Image 1 (cartoon, rainbow, N blue to C red):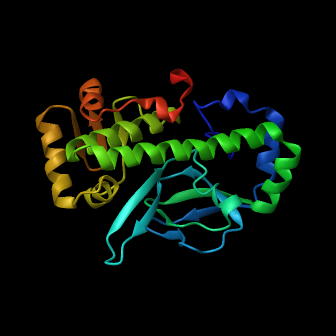
Image 2: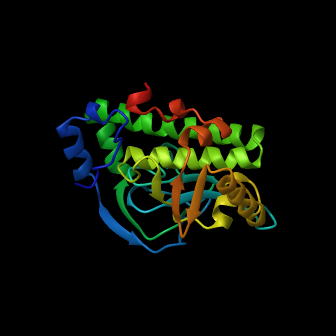
Image 3: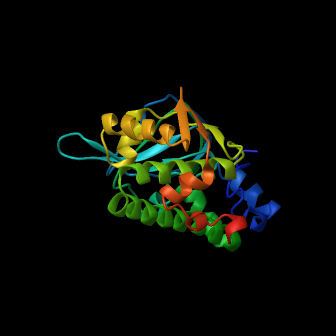
Length: 238
């Protein structure tokens, strides 16, 4: 099933079998994308929406000097550019972090689903509102937390998202991001990120080695990062 992870742990029980069948039928094709590839460039017209089946993707923006800020990190189960459906283009770039498997749904097919599938439409709308909630949390993280708290918060967030789709056991997970990637996510340099990861290890909160994250003290890491998962709207958090 293409959409096996769609809204998993987030209101998936509200998707009917007919809704899922209609969504599956709307897929125009599957694509395998190599790592570190820009899939959609800023201001480029988009005619399809992309669903991430496997891998990690990111949205990013570059300043005039070429310095990059990641504005979202996506995992399996995410529609990575569903907001491009009503907007017609993206105001940022969309790229793969790893090799990815994606499904593409033409906007013309989404037009039809909106007419015939109001329940599915509502849940896809929920998906875009979830993105907005995460963006607000990222603004809070970058604007109000210090460097080590930003890193802690992001690690807690990505672990929670991966656990929701069965790709974390609650303490250990694979995170194929370089220290430069993490720095661009948290608004610090790669050198500063290295220091923060070392400090988190010294505090016995978490370790990361060869893209494998092990959270030693989940409660302590969440407290340091002021992490409250309610903005992720998981089934077990309301």
